[in-house]
Length: 114
Length: 116
Image (cartoon, rainbow over all chains, first blue to last red; front, top):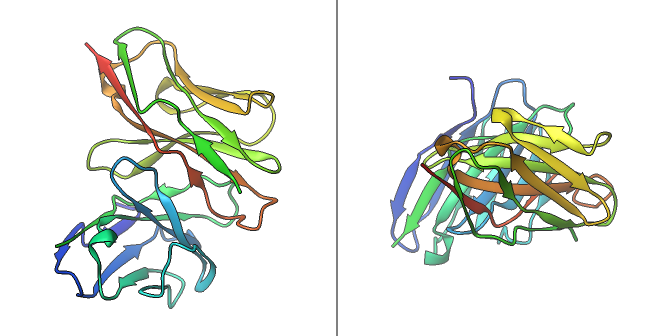
């Protein structure tokens, strides 16, 4: 499968714990995005990388959230001191440099904070 | 700020009938408009996009959408619905002239159910 891969697919954690999600992009795609989707809502933008550079961050991305893309390939999204309000589907999407905006999404990582 | 509205949370249509899923947008500048579909336990899949040119764009699985600048709408259509079209549909917009040039802004989604 050469699509966007996300791991883990499901994560259940207790409030206050840290969690980390990983995204492996389509190999030739240098743009990578993280979105969050809650039930009944559309995806909300969190952050954007072009290669290893984090170029945009949403106000939704509190200081408990951090994302990295150290070598311009895979990316990680870490949430520290999780809260129940962090429960959501975390989506990774990628695109090649020269395209007009369509994104290729992974299947998401579902987080449940108890 | 850019925004997208999908006024219908749920659309039901009989198999074989035409379907329309509505989307309106609000942007400053020229919009790039997209439709995505999400099947249960699957990632969002790109259906079609409007960038420039012909207002009627055709996409995957027989879907099409019409860009209407005066009404700021981008409704998704299909002449004959299939049961397999049942899914959650999202409209999205992107504006290159804005400060947030890279992100897509999504609507809240419309659940389409095609009844056999």
